[in-house]
Image 1 (cartoon, one colour):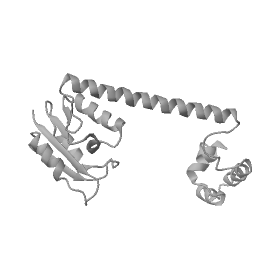
Image 2: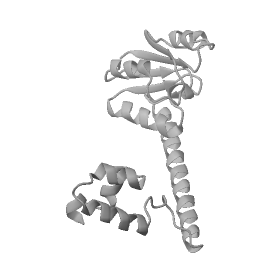
Image 3: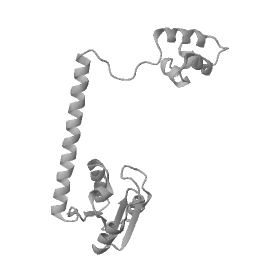
Image 4: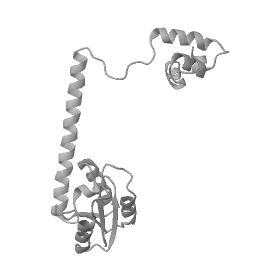
Length: 188
């Protein structure tokens, strides 16, 4: 049952000293540190720390925002740790998922994140419904008009002209032509 520390700063001009000192004082024997934006998905030292952890271990951070950029990302990471039998501790916020109280607080965080997600979905659906009522159509505009389709159909009927050449003449990609004409020439 090891305490494994993870520290992160966003830029090279910031100092990891405060975090690493606090992690060592908390009893972390193994530390993983890096300089990377929290928004980055590719954080090699975090990946190494997560790979290093074993069942019964606890991942320790100085502050919640050192581990994740969003509440959803934080909850997902801590849930994945929990599934592996690994605890999580944040020193600044005094959260420790190895205790009943810490798990309760973390579940409250999860409920708040779920509530926020549902509110966003409701607002999005209401906005789309209102736009439909006003006659607006969502989505991307069609890349080929009916006249373009008729011209492309005539060009594709000729076996001497390649699909790539037709696409180039029409100003679209071959994939777009295939989307409008599934099966290519055989679908005409």
